[in-house]
Image (cartoon, rainbow, N blue to C red; front, side, top):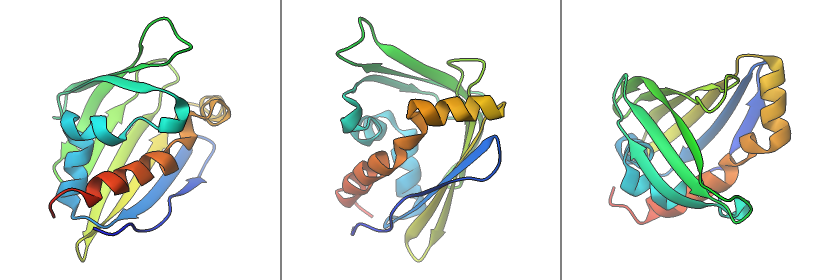
Length: 160
């Protein structure tokens, strides 16, 4: 599979950020990359952040949960990210909470297939303008271009 388009990210309101990219792979392959730990471990952690993806637990069903643990040389212990899947429609849509703090976002990812390519949209909705401002200032919202480049590389090695 060939690499495709660049990632775009737009703040669409005080509390919402939308990121888009098209992948040269069918929606079911891209969806699996987002929902199976053995795939997620291969592309999710942005290398430039200096983090290591330690563990990935995913119960991908409506009402199920996830827990990702990352290591970083500047921290004594692992950093954990967790939440609940609010909606799972295979090959079409994922909605989950980011429950590390009370200011965590709700993330909706849609997978739209067209001619064997997948148009991916990530919509993050924060509980307040300040929460989104803080997320942008911390750099946590800026990882998608690097993550999606890694996903492109990973998908290139997957059967269609």
